[in-house]
Image (cartoon, rainbow, N blue to C red; front, side, top):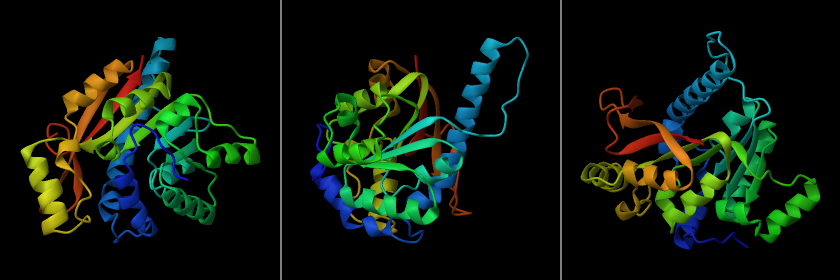
Length: 273
């Protein structure tokens, strides 16, 4: 049985379930995610270390520099984790990672790959709203009883990467993600802006011309403007602190950060006050 909530779009779940076996193929249907993953991870880690340095400075008059990245003991939640492309790198950095997805096949793929990689990651077939309300699927309830490891109520770090543009109810989804962040914790979003440029590049270019993605992967009307995301986050008590764009260099054919170009792909970081 698949997890259900206001934000879950059954057609989106079915679309990604059909290609779930390709999650870990760097040249398969999820190649764009493999290509941007190092960029996303690097930017996220910079935000985490910067936040940690600021917290240290508040407690001491001595200026400190960020120490090498370690997330040992940090509770991290990846919402819409898919096959675990983000979960595994952060588990290797010591975080206690929970990955959730509404697609059972995605979770099955993620569990198998983590096992093959020798990583302990808590994967569950559920949704953000269900974690908040406690009204989770029978599968998740059974998982708790087997592992004796109930999920935390809130997390130090929450990811919602490349998922908001696939949900049915954006305000409900963002509200739930904000409730899952601890006070003082960080939340990260990665999504696509709703502009003419994004329609041209992310849909026409990526799906119809270059065929990087299956046709129908994205719907332009579901793309989210940065101002809209910021407003939804404020409603949830989260202050947007950093944003950057991600662009594809046409010469090197590699992705790069572009802080002043939010026209298409962008990353956002917020703190729960």
